[in-house]
Image 1 (tube, rainbow, N blue to C red):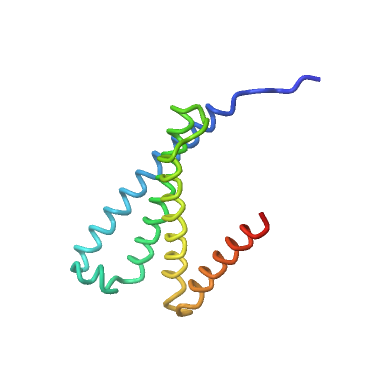
Image 2: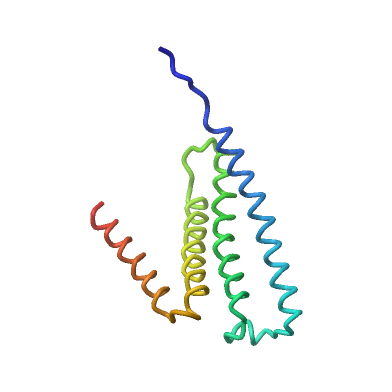
Length: 143
């Protein structure tokens, strides 16, 4: 019996590249939405930095932060697969992946906060942070 063998680099490179293009388009469209919504509502810089945004805009910012991290991660995975043959990567790639992971985590917590805070207060997003910290500690402990 023979097994079907193929090089997974090309399909994975194409999937990551396609995801990168779609994420970039989405992030740009979301930034445009926030720009237009800010003008429509007559919001000032102070509203942006002093808690004066409506819940829908808080959620949009959270999605942009999360998807910005996904865009960075996807772009670097595509570059790594395309130009480095998915081999070893150095400190710049590690720094990019760490930045992307931080943005994804912050964006996820911010999304949880944006949708739960109006109805449930601060408990859900603070518990989410505690759950992530417990996961990280347990992962390191049982390594």
